[in-house]
Amino acid sequence: MATYIVLLGPPGAGKGTQAKLIAEKLGLAHISSGDLFRENLKAQTELGILAQSYMTKGELVPDDVTIAMIRDRLSRPDCAQGALLDGFPRTPAQADALATMLASLGGSVKCVPLIAVPAAVLIERLSGRWSCRAAGHVYHEKFNPPKQAGICDLDGSELYQREDDKLETVQNRIAVYERQTAPLIEYYRQRGLLVEVDGARPIEEVGADLLAVVTR
Ligand code: ADP
Ligand code: AMP
Image (tube, rainbow, N blue to C red; front, side):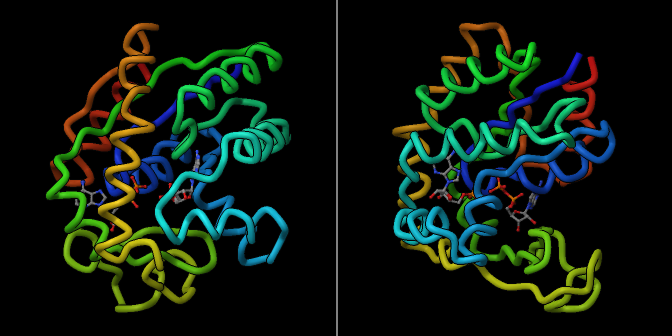
């Protein structure tokens, strides 16, 4: 049966960093809703242009378009073994929709690791984040620097700083997380799926704990 895992945590917790490592180890598709919106924006699709107006303010893109985008992504062949969801769901309505989508695929969410990190640490992480243009690989100028400044180790593409990683937007993204996404902690706890992992440790230590959680 397909394995579906939801990675939960505030912006900057390390979801993307860890999801890339774990998805590869487990042979699961990595689905990042933020990456999908950025790809759409790069291709100047209608969805990308709509999403941009919310992303630049650090607000959530409306549920209906976000849910439709993920439904389409989950139906692709590379998700046959399952998927690691990073950044989706972000509201209880999205979580309900996910449960319905997975039920129609004959599956359900297996577990929900919560990467817990204090707000002060998040700001430092996001202000030093550099992402690669080609595939969204993530680096940090201090905590996870690339071998050569400005160049992705994995695919040689240019690294850039996200528009929504500037301080003012980051502060709003954290507030939006607290207001709209944090209720999912209780949502998944009540369903017996939540497992908290301390994300305020080096990348390798967090990764080892997450791998143990998702494979048990
Ligand atoms: P998210 O996807 O949750 O927003 P990212 O994976 O993009 O978070 O990580 C945010 C930033 O923090 C990146 O610059 C990344 O390199 C860095 N980072 C991720 N995990 C850790 C960690 N455990 N310790 C220090 N820095 C980290
Ligand atoms: P991320 O790459 O996860 O940090 O997401 C970047 C931005 O994309 C967010 O600040 C939102 O504007 C938008 N976004 C990503 N995922 C979602 C989602 N599940 N629901 C609504 N908006 C989202």
